[in-house]
Image (cartoon, rainbow, N blue to C red; front, side, top):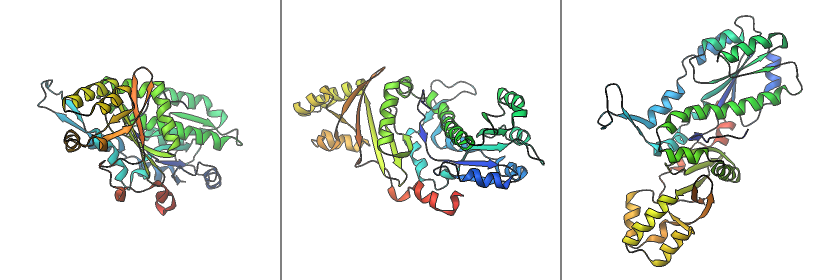
Length: 337
């Protein structure tokens, strides 16, 4: 599925399957995407008790969002929102984030509590919901979809392609889960970032880097559109992005600080970009050590012009590799089942 807007983060999450038919559950599990962690329940009431108190969306937002009542824009019961974009990538340090539930797949026809009843009881839980139903109940499933109780329904009549349809639906809704999680964040970021993340040309660049890095996770790093990608083993790749305005402003500042003419020419031609992880690095550069913070760059032109560099190493970036729990280890652990 081709996305029309990038999310500010993504990482593998867990899918829940609920069906009172043990044989069906065991058979469908064998056909699921092996890179999707899952939990299964035969008893819908047990599933309801396990899921009804999930508050994953609020937990994420509380870590990167704060209100600023001292803002000049403050009015009664209204606050300017402060976003700590630099905290987004720290989600990679959580040993529990792969176990976060993003999608539930429920069979409709269950004796103790049918799928519709279960999902209605989970209407306030911020997860995506898929219902499996027989052909006779298709009109009822359409009604539930229109009411927003479910996000997709799949007819069980076509058993040969059922697993494929379930895999596709889970993948699409996991993407949608992170899109919704990102929406509040993106609404409170500079307009140019929303333009960047919605620009088809930038999205193509992003997907190329993601695929080349074999990334299963990614995290927005700044308001320019830079991202950190992690593959299943936790190996990082950086996509560092600078806007045309940033390039021009830095070139002017570098000239004022006495940077060499060759550097200024390279900046203006788009051959390099400068990136500083903190102010101390900028001070170090202005003292004459510019080369440490310059990276070979390319330009891509979409709605706007983006200068970018793809890096396998970014000295000074505050990532602690020892704290990252690789997805491959999670899949191989008992906690993934």
